[in-house]
Length: 319
Image 1 (cartoon, one colour):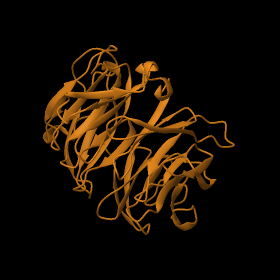
Image 2 (cartoon, rainbow, N blue to C red; image 1 turned 90 degrees about the vertical axis):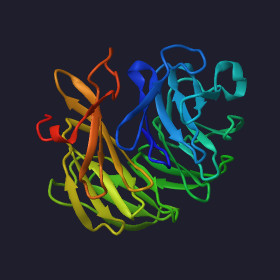
Image 3 (cartoon, one colour; image 1 turned 135 degrees about the vertical axis):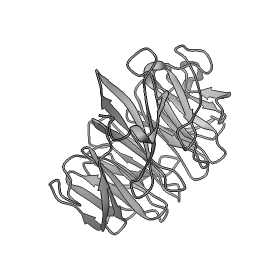
Image 4 (cartoon, rainbow, N blue to C red; image 1 turned 45 degrees about the vertical axis):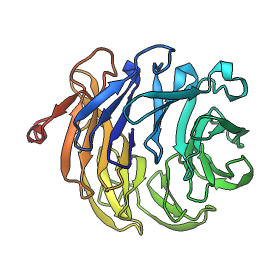
């Protein structure tokens, strides 16, 4: 899931091999893509990112490529296929990130690929650490420092792949603040780290009370200096200093990811348990007031997408 500067929401619908597009209010603006290998088609699209000019980049995992689209879904280009030789991405693309100057970074196994906004390959380098994990998360700081987290270590690189240092950390959930500091999840809390891994602050303890954590799975930063954590089936909100500012429980069976729009609006993605697990996407104010939701009601396949808008009046009796 990605949110553009104008509030438009993009969701990769992997099971149906397409991308869906919505207004900030959840009104569908259309979808594009189908199963296949042609331009604009997908095979299990995963990561998605939007750059400042509004272009949309999609990690087309099983086709081993990145595809670039205009905001309305018009195909603009692709790269990473086997025919691209050195820029061939291969299987197991895991994360995609956009740098402050528009660079596109993709992780694939233990490699990081760096492209310019037009898809020209700039470099490819190994982020391999002493860990044997192939799961890697990416983040790019305002000064173009690249952070790669694999669940055992966080490693720092330049865009060209020069190693800058690192430290041990068991999380792959990290968010970079505008000042270049990091916020990362631990098993039972949040750590605020300097750009080089020095602990500047931390909060949280095991439990289910306010400010405690039982199963933290995702973290995001808001433009109002808020820190949001998906913890089990609830969203907790903190200041950047760790002061608890409230929580709420979305009507979902499981919570997966969270994104914050430039105006502070939150989008929470997860699943609701009906006759089977259905994907759902909910929208909230920064204080947790519900603004709308949508979930899959029609279509075929286990990932048929977020196609049915459900009015706010049905929120209370949803589950």
